Length: 309
Image (cartoon, rainbow, N blue to C red; front, side, top):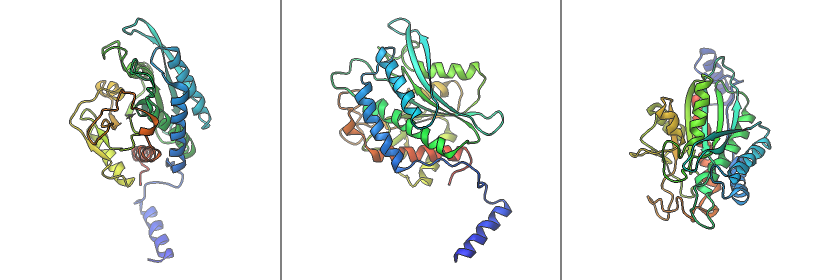
């Protein structure tokens, strides 16, 4: 087919209504430069903000650091401080929040979530490079990518949560405090959640994303389709286990939610023996994995906004 013929076919399709995406539709793209920036940001975050245990001054410094790095992408961020009970009494915690307002009236919200805190008492030299830093940096890079694309139909929130990790053992007052606080904000302001998408441990050099069994089937299917459209078939699977993570706070409250996580972070396929150990270092994550993760997330986002490939 010649160029003029192809142009005629495309034009005819537009006239007939077969092509839904208009010339002005915003499409988010995640590039190799974004992945490179995410990797260097993760390294800097580890170097400057570890440890970053929840409810500590170091945790607050990490939140301020994230806000500063987001601002360098040209996006406004805010630190949302709050107090909550914990096994060690009332503590001050801090989420970081970015809001992109959508073009639709009364638009619902798509929430992209990554925790940034580290668990306590892991050992000297612990970095939390994959578990915490990798997706913190990925979300910072995604902030820049969404800004470049321009307004999307729905409202988008980027949420960096504090206190995802527990201090002692997961309980009503221990763990997922940042996600619980954010959910309360949605309820108090009567904001509808279209999708809550958890991002966790996505920098693993040997990346394979396994969605947990607890999650909205429609969104899980959308993730599979997004992987296919992004040329990442085989990267994603659906597990049989129920996983506790920030996304589950939204899911258990009745919001559509899905978790993108690589919970096989270890020395051999299927193992998770690097998780919550001093082996979770920068040499265990890669720029390539951040690129794949970013491409998957933006394709999913574009699909949810009606602008997928």
